[in-house]
Every structure is written in C-alpha cells, then in structure tokens.
Amino acid sequence: MNDLEEIATLLAKPEPSAGAVARGRDRLQRRTREGRARRRVGWFVPGVALAAAGAAAVATVVFATGAPTNDGVPVTGKEVLLMAAVSAERTPQASGTYWHVTRQWFKSDIPPMESWTGRDGRRWTKGEPGDPPDAVVPAPAWRMLSLKGAKVSFEDLERLPTDPEALKAWIAERKGNENDMSASEIRGEPTFTLLALITELPAPAEVRSAAFRALAATPGVENAGAVEGGQQLRLLNPDGDKSIELVVDPEKARVTRANLVLAGDGGLAWSDEFISVTTEWTDQLPSVKKS
Figure 1 (cartoon, rainbow, N blue to C red):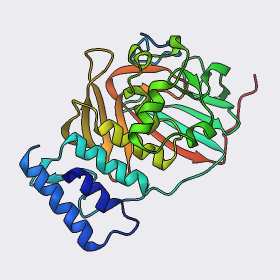
Figure 2: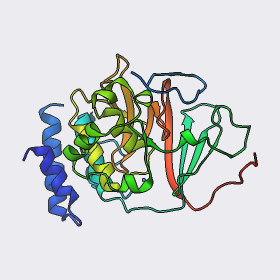
Figure 3: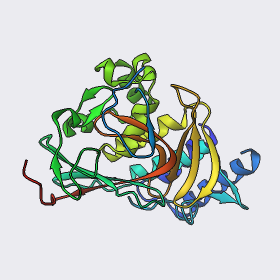
C-alpha cells in the first residue's frame, strides 16, 4: 500500500481517531514536500463551442478551506481527487422526488440553465436553448438521463460498481448509440463517463467515490492551484488538444466549476469560460408551462 492509499484508508474509516487523522495528515504533508467521434450536438449554449461528442466535511485537519496546501504549496491533482473520493464515501445519501441541476456561467449575467428529472424518467428544463423565457417546460424524450450514449434510470445508476477498476471495466463494456458518444467513449475510454458521474448525474455516494478514484489514476492529472471554490485541476482530453479544466472542492467531493458541460442527456459542450454546476434532490417541481 502506497502513501496515498494509506492516507485514504485512514481517513475513510467510519470514525477515524485523532491519531489516525494526524498520521494521515503527516503522510500527506510528507508526500507534498517530496514532490508535487463523435457526440450528438443536442443543444446550443450561448458562448460555448459544441463538440461532436450530492456532503459531509471530512478531514478538516487536512483541509481548511477546500484548498489543501503545505506551506502554501498545493498537493497534487491525484491527491485532491483521492481526498474527494474519501469525502464522497462519507457523504450521507440524499433523497428526493426530482434531481435538480443548475448550470451557471461563472461571474456572468447569462441566465442559468436548469433541469429537473423525476424518478419515473420524466424531465423538465428552464433556460435551455429553445425554452420560453422564465418558463419550466417538459423536455423532449431524447433529453432523458444518458450515460455513454445510452439512456439510464436512477436504478441503473444505483447498481453501478463501487470498485474503481470494476467501474472502468463496466464503462469499457457498455454499449450505446455511437452517434451519442465521443470518439474516446467509442474506444472504451472512461474519462467523460467518469466525469459525468461526479458532476451532473445522480450517482450514489459510493459510485461517485469510485469515479473519483478512477480519475485519480488517470495519467496526466495536474493541479493548477487553489482558486475560488477549491483546487483547479487539469486533465488530458482523450478526444483532442483542449485540456479538461475542473475546480474540485475535496471536502465536499464536488466539482464546482468546469470548462465543459457533460449534460445528463448525453450532450457535451466546451466553453472558454468556467461554468458552475450545482446539483440537489428536491421534492418540489416549479410550475410547469402547459404546452
């Protein structure tokens, strides 16, 4: 077991002792000192180029503000993702009638885009291209929850593997509509599918943890440093030259902003500016405009 795995093991215990947390912190600090194609264009978003193509705080001794550092030096991107995985495991499972997703251009006056997906598969949107202003409307059938080019239910997500390697194997074997998949997804590469599980889809806590761990093992993960909302990570784009940029809050196991949108309906959009994504379960659906 290497240092990072031992840190995660120590902090992932149901009630880690003060000594265990301290040992995990010390190992993290030592580690920090030692070295730091295609997808259907489903909808249009202002200001972005379209490509073919939920949290209990943990280890607050290590994280003061969601920005882990040692003497001002950030830990590696891999370490940030592993700590987010630990936090995800300890996140109480939320519940509700509708999965509510809000996408907002960071520091922009552009109105947010919202969606509500019911456990029966029905979906409503507000502010997406083609929606009437300030109205919640039923979404077309093709805008249901999607994962790697195929529709998924809440039950499907709850049955996903909770081991990182098993999850990647499941992704590689999953069959979907190639017109709704990127070139890397067609090849069986897991990056975009893993990102979808930790950003917009209502995956259970243990599945999200496995996705964070799997991404931590991805070659080329870099930490660009602390920013508002967490740590800015850079990942290799398996489909091209443009890097994937994420802001991850490791305490809350949340991706708070990204330079792409991995929509629950299978669409993918790139942006030159960050887009914030917030998700929650809710029991209330806003008033729906009658068609």
